[in-house]
Each structure stands twice: as structure tokens, then as C-alpha cells.
Image 1 (tube, rainbow, N blue to C red):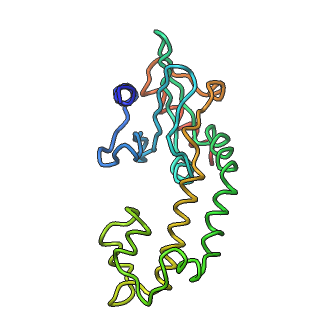
Image 2 (cartoon, one colour):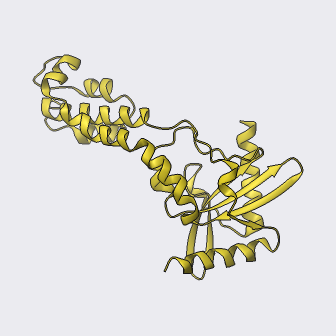
Length: 220
């Protein structure tokens, strides 16, 4: 927890230094910061490190790949007594994201394919053969994946769930389990990956805006 707290303080200092905006409603899993540039709000991922390589997230998966595509990056290197800041555009981060996407691609294909192979026979083997299934049956299968309102909305008969609807829940449970198993455990971005990134040493807020504008212009 101490490390997380220190990272939070450093990221807040970076927002202040570079004139970035934090939407407090985003929470820890949301967008770290926004840069206002000529009426646009540019999303930023902020990272800090004290040893060179940059940690990412504990369960890195498809949702993070989608989240990080199109984001700009600002890295703070707090190494010994030296502080260095580097900026990378979405294009400069694309190779690393693409590499991780390729790594889990087969798992993602399996996640979509395997659940469709389940049949009512499989359902009966797991939950027993019933004419209807109850809310308790559904919760025993899906655990805390849904809230109460979602469970009730999925019921397709007065008695609860028909076998066909419960089969759908079983398929969704398998998708969830495969997706969890396909995540990477905190993949690090190596220090060398940032060699060609832009180092910002002065006029931090102004320099960052110039670099972002330049990179946006290069995309068109």
C-alpha cells in the first residue's frame, strides 16, 4: 500500500507540473489525466518508476489493450536523486501494446469459441437436470459476477430460469474464467523501450502541449 500511495503522490505532482486535469469520477481504474488542447481533451496514462522499467497492472488483459489504444503516455523516472520525464504518443506505445495483444490472441479466440461448445448435457452434469432453475442456482454458478438486478433481469420465466437460459449463464461463466486465466501478471515495460521517447526537462506544461500537438498533426 505504501508504494501505491507514493505513486499516487507522484502522479498528482505530475498533473500539477504538466497542467493536466484529473476527473475524480474516473476512480483508480479510469483515465489518469486529461490534457486540454485547443478544445480537445486528450487522455493520458501516467506512470512512475524508481528502477527504470515500468509496471503496468496485476491482471493485464484485453480490456487494458482497448483502454490504452489511443492514449498518450507520460512517464516519471524517479531514479536515485534524479527525476526525468518522458512523453510518448499513442503511436510510440503501439508496438508494446500490439505485442501483448498478439500474446493473448489465441486465448481470446478460445474464450469466444469454447463456451459455444457447451450443451444442455453439460449443464445437467454441473447443476443437475431441472425443469426450471432458481435464483440460488444462478448465483451458485455465476458467484458475484452479476448484481441482484442483473440476475433478476436475466430470468426468462416466472419460476426463474429455463434450462436454455441457464445454459447461456454457464457459457458466460466459462467466458469469464478463460478471460481471467488469459491475463498477464503485471507485464513490465522495459527501460530501453523509452529510448526514443521525448524527454521534457523545462517549461513542462508548454513543452508537453507542443509535443502533443506535433504528434496529433503527424497522424493526419
